[in-house]
Image 1 (tube, rainbow, N blue to C red):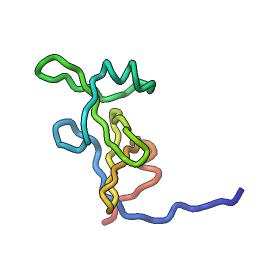
Image 2: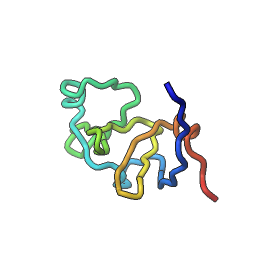
Image 3: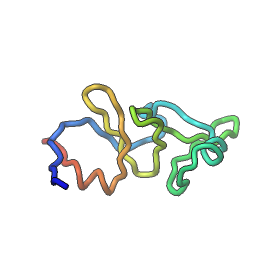
Length: 97
């Protein structure tokens, strides 16, 4: 196999915060645990006023990606969003002064 280096690509990114409108939507936690088949550890959960617990997500060409505690939301120039864990984010990106 050949080796490749990631090409430098400026992106806009911010650590996820509840209530800032950074997500594309929410799914009921009960649907996530029964239908999505994902690892639940660290998953952000928000309790609504009606008592329902929901999980925020972003949607991109790969589908729905649920947001975990400490994740960054990355926005590309074309508007596509990605989720990146804090550990990987710090390895892959550096702030542009």
